[in-house]
Length: 304
Image (tube, rainbow, N blue to C red; front, side, top):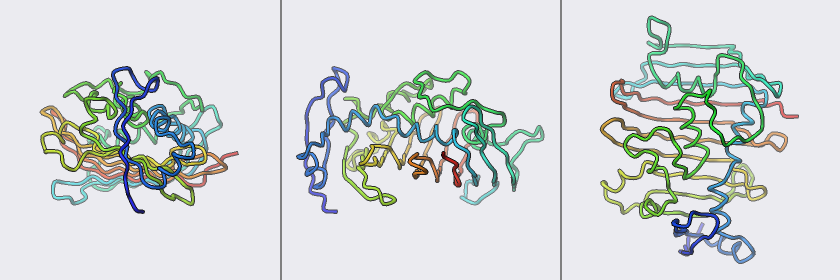
């Protein structure tokens, strides 16, 4: 698509805090045309900040019965696979409680310690998110309060994943929370904000791309934990049906380099995650560094 961009700068009133300046937004030709027909960029950015549809998609993941297949790969320093975990099973839900059954679990390489616990943190984290051992309560209610039953890492992951621009993480080391505020005045100088459109799974979508400016020095890039967030909003209902993240950060206490891609699709008008991909490296003081890839496919949803 021809990207003749127009920079629009204006100040928002109620959508942002009084000391928050609306970022410069770049629009492509199609969006400019739609703006002239009632599309409001200010409202769009407000919606991005307050969006709950992406979170709801993951609520649907736990709420509806479906099949799953996953593969987790752990790499050594040379990039060769040293351990792997493959799972296949079913996620059952009656609308109040859910549990999973694993029909197949294949472990290769040194996955466990002698105690039977995982040797690595990555599979432990994904088990907490996608493969709970016990029966769990489920609902479609959006609750802004953090679930104290989740681990701190789980609570922070939900904040980062579901609330674009939020700094309400419990982990504060290295100024982590402040670096998540991609709309804050202090962070806007590091980012480009672009609205365009695309066709995704035969759905017309707005694309909102937040990415680190290409001309930044390496020193300035290090101040931006979030290197990019790309979201596809279904034009028909503004559901987020695709999102990808790029995180990169280096600090004395920890460093990370992660990519996350979430593809959603509709089943009986409900948007659900069908393909989730993670590729990451992290190094936390007192722990061994980990390099891993994770892929999860969810199929055969029962949505009535």
